[in-house]
Length: 110
Length: 113
Image 1 (tube, chains in turn green, cyan):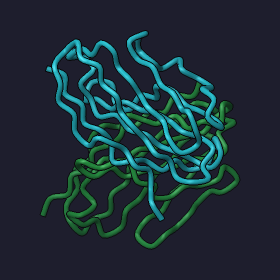
Image 2 (cartoon, helix red, strand yellow; image 1 turned 30 degrees about the horizontal axis):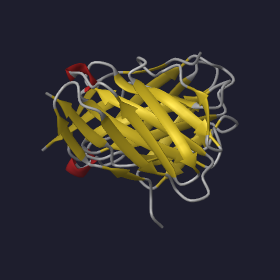
Image 3 (cartoon, rainbow over the protein chains, first blue to last red; image 1 turned 90 degrees about the vertical axis):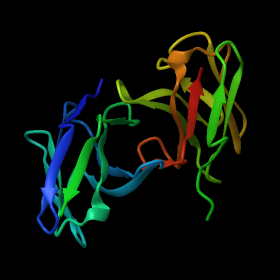
């Protein structure tokens, strides 16, 4: 089945860009997602990209997809303290049901 | 629009007791998912339903866990008897199709003493 890997922690300074990386194993994955989880809340969909796209931009968020390397990244420009949260990558492979990574805790310090 | 609604938000009970978690998916969504989140294991898919029918329950940890979806607007996850290691945050999510974005509820934080 699908396996999705992310690093567990990322620390950045306020105002800098954050880049959260994710790798997946199933080359047939059609949809790739980024979710954000704030303390005490459920996962909230941030953005998603279809496998026939290389890039998607939405305000401060940029998603890059490298299908050859099965690598997905989420870039947050001008990172703010309110961006501190856990970010989950998810990929829908052959089963079509998304598999989630362990999540990356983004810590933004002044 | 109302999102996915879970109840209760918090549950504290003693081991051996029966626990029932409830979920109301978004109207019109055909898929419903139950997840468990812990520090040690991250987010685990327990079971999911399509059109009220359980499709994959391979993530259900033990026979003590059971889930039902009697109609399109309601699902339960039951643990009987509960054990301290069941302590976790349980999430319900729904989606319009299997590979479409899932919408999550705010979760039930379960503590078994």
